[in-house]
Image (cartoon, rainbow, N blue to C red; front, side):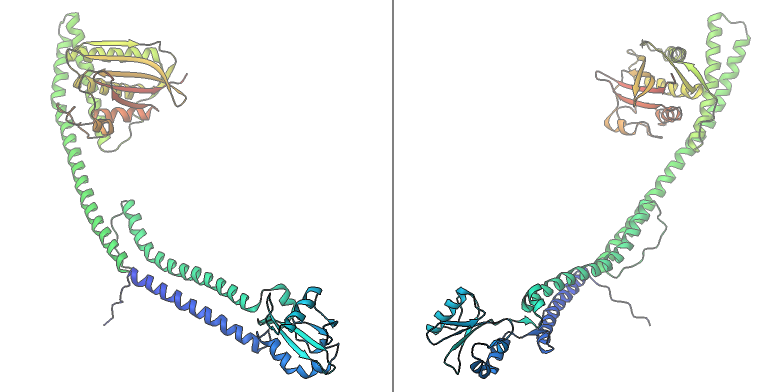
Length: 462
């Protein structure tokens, strides 16, 4: 039976790091000390008491050397030879060192006032040889003594460098190990961010990371259930709207048939005009139903009709005519504010009119009947581009903060301030889609006094 590998904890991982760091630090210190000692044994460096030992060993030779004891003076030492009265005879002392050395002899002080020690050797001829030496390690080669700090100091420098390297390499090793475990966690979050919820959650070697991954696994399941429920809801809405568009066809066919019969009979001019309005709008409704089905199933509407050039003045007249027809049908007052239209637009007229009619219908739906609507047509600029702006103002309760965020999204039926009528939440969404396909945009906001303003921005072409 396979033994299950014991999982680590973050505390254990950091404890292991701390222990290894401390052990390595101790080994570095011990190793540098042993290396320092070994360097003296193999002749790379000289021990701290090297001068003392050499002076002791060659004491007799220095006593017999007279004024020339250089051969027996150890490396790194200075000396001076004096007569019995303190007169200078020979040596390597400077002028000041000569006086200091003789004063130390007279006072029988072997410790130098600066650093180092004195050795007083009485020679056979009655002269006095004074040698000044230090008790610290030196290199066997004088050139190294001139270029490098003493071996003891060098040992501390090496310790410091190895200490830093120990910290860096251990940190990188443990960081690499931890990152390898975190990569599994990152992989899960990236898949969730991409809405890829069909994956297996693997385990890591660290208990805390496993706990986080298990939490993400539960989040994945909850998100999967939520998305499935949302999808089912959207599908249900689409099916309901599809059934609704199909059901509308029957009464629409009856309305159109009766309007055609009325048009064929002898009618007055006014009644004949009303029949023509009925037939025209019945055809529009049928086209709208077809386009609603296309929106529901994600079909693009770009090819629904050809694009053509039309002047802004002519398009404004078409907008005004549509607004008058709707206002007459709804029995609400309407006013116009038109400011010097110029240039032209290159657009799919059918789509632009559908967007405009959706906005008109939305305004008529939410305005106060006695106040009606106000239509504004003007030229404006946005992002250094020219636009024809056709705006509809209603005198209703206006958009709520939630409306201002979601009003142009499909199936959004409005906040309590604007949902007192029955609708499916497609009007502004369809208008926005039509306008964007023409290079324009939809803007909706609250009027500073009362009601809401929805604007079609249609790009001009000069």
